[in-house]
Image (tube, rainbow, N blue to C red):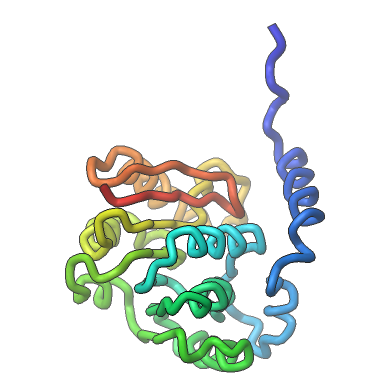
Amino acid sequence: METKKAFTTDRLEKYQTYIESLYGAKSSMSKEDFVSKTSWKDFVPVVDDDAARFLQFVLQMKKPKKILEIGMSIGFSTTSMALTAQEYGGKITTIEFDRTACKQARSNFVRSGVDDVIQIMFGDARQVVPDFSSGSFDFIFQDADKRLYPGLLKDCIRILKPGGVFIADDTLFPVMDLDDRWNDQIESIRIFNRLVADSSELDSTLLPIGDGMIVAIKK
């Protein structure tokens, strides 16, 4: 019986290269271009182009009016989503704890013409998220410190409307060959992935987009 070929890092890179050859030219904004125009370079890594495209794709399908992003960095994913959200009247609230990142992101939003779509909330997500009312958001994208993921999940589910979409980035960390600086975040992602998969309140799957994205819908 014929078996499928092993899923290797080299194979994944070939897949990504092929996908970018198909869709890269159609993207409204690329990570490389966005980063090149950002003066501050000491920022937390941002999502890859395929992940940004996927976020835009989901927004186009669901057209959520109230969007929450947890973890903004310099605002690449925020801008990507805002370019789509402004087409149908959606608004984004984004949380970031680094003041320099907030300042740089705000500048990037103005340059990209999406600053009127985005509200920046400076602070620790562990203090900010619990203050939101139940059912406040139609769509939540989480890309903060991975150690926060398990502790924030209960509130993320609470503040998400029934039928709303929850996406979390970097969820393939447990099976990736990562730089040592990420080692202290791997176990938190492993715990988070299991919590989401076992949740009675969510229907979910984990997609090999970027460094892994869990996509869930609140029942």
